[in-house]
Length: 471
Image (cartoon, rainbow, N blue to C red; front, top):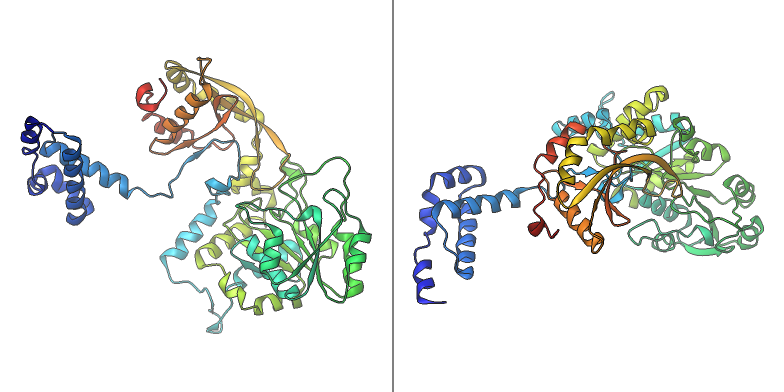
């Protein structure tokens, strides 16, 4: 550092000088004096390290920006324009307005979580959803835990801990995040017995595997992948007689699970929970935050005596659901009592049932913004597309959609430039998340309902190519 540089840095303001600035006083009022002092010290240290001259106002402004950025929630709202409706990384199902209101009410007040208001005695938290689950699924009894992996773990641990659990080799799925069915079964205390092959399993494979040590038959609905071609699986209804003959429970894990026939909404049929109950499985497990459209939960429905055993399992307490999710869940389940209006009131079904004609009009309403982006190094145009459900359900199923294709006119480095453009969109006050497809940044319109908010958010967007790595 030169003598001139040293002399300049001596002119840097002191911490006290910055804190006396009027702008700094406003920041202190928002974030507190301690936080502001630390931020100012950091700004001044950086200036000395970089040989940069900072005035009082500039230092206060930078400290304020640093505090503003640090105070921003990491769990931030985003615009999900990936084309995946139930996106695991973006929070899966959006909750219905009724569920949101119920959750807020539960957060703001003491609630009768485990209290029977009628007789003034201790109650059970599952009672808030037990009866409506029995009503919708026709199951004898029901209980709820914090997700479907927990439901499977608890069910297996209750009926087959220390015993053998028979499952088809083709159903030993990985459910995401490297969590695999064999590992869940092992952690539950069961000895895994694989039968059949990856692509073909017959009823005789199950028959030959049953021994006095068998604790359960496990059927796993492979909702997150499909094997096509030379395949064979044994449906639950064919396993019921075998389970009854040997007095062992049949557990049917539906994975995502749905309470209504998706065919009525223009989607491909997926086995419903009521159908699984009617087939005769003793225990059925499924998720609450996927096709059901509620908060993250896992359900266990089935025979009354088995549900009672599950509820007596000490692990149940560790896996129970809190009052906020229970409130949202109860409100969500009540919507299923009015199936004729379900698609209008439940966001998951509303988004999935949007027609291609409705979606195709959305990019046209984005014309002014698309023209603005096309004025940079990119072109932006409306295109047809295909969206998917996501989070496991119907993995091979896609539905016609419409989107906006943003791509560079340059032949070289198209992928990296589109990735840089994606970063610029994610830097907006409400990050916009799309997908990279064939060298372009694509925004799928299926999940965009707040068009006004989206356009307002884009008012903060500007492409400065060198800054954003687009040059």
